[in-house]
Image 1 (cartoon, rainbow, N blue to C red):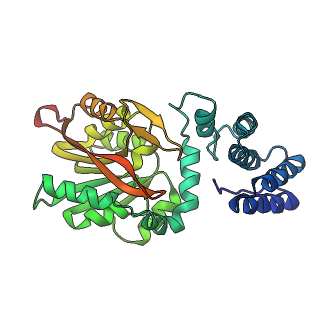
Image 2 (cartoon, one colour; image 1 turned 30 degrees about the vertical axis):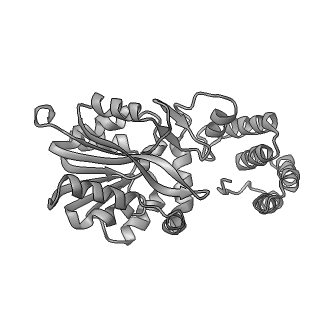
Length: 310
């Protein structure tokens, strides 16, 4: 369950909300529903309580009730800090194209930043190591001049590749994740903001990179075409783009139960081709384990050719 908590403005409501979360965490969903209903009787405009009510109704098999609760949460908080639009995309067959709000992603990772590294370690996360191995195999003995780490998070990919680059830039939407990365003193430059907007600014400032890496950040993008095009615009001739995505057996994009997007190999290849990049490889990879099973993914490598470089 999403554990994002902001105050409702009422101490009694906040206490009952916390109790409800505790009951839900222990699996007593009926008790949690009662408490969340009490919270909403006191503070009916408290979006996190509507969202939490929707989550426990899902656990109880009350799909219609869950949809109603998520709709109320989204109506109260149109910026969608809790991720109600994603839940509605799963439950009510809503279009998932724009369901992943920046506010949700930022709030999610601001919350998880202090425990993020430990959480990924518990999932046997190998994304950065897999990317480093792929980069080394493609460009053996090369030291890159400038690397850009998209969705740098706490700096796991930057740490994995630091010895292979002279200048390392990281960008992430979450200020708290960037703060964690800054404390590690891995990066020469760190920025906070939207990836595509940052890439557009880098293009206008003539920013050029010979290595761009994205470790599992594209699970928060529905369509990869815009970000692939933005990456192509900042790659130097022969520049390398290395990235991972979660995948599924289909051709397009789907929203998974963990509220992350899964990209089919055909969608990935199409996005890279449309950006004017040359696909070197798109290979199956598993970067983490969830519920004792490998999470299916793809590792992509693409190059900007001399003829298409700006």
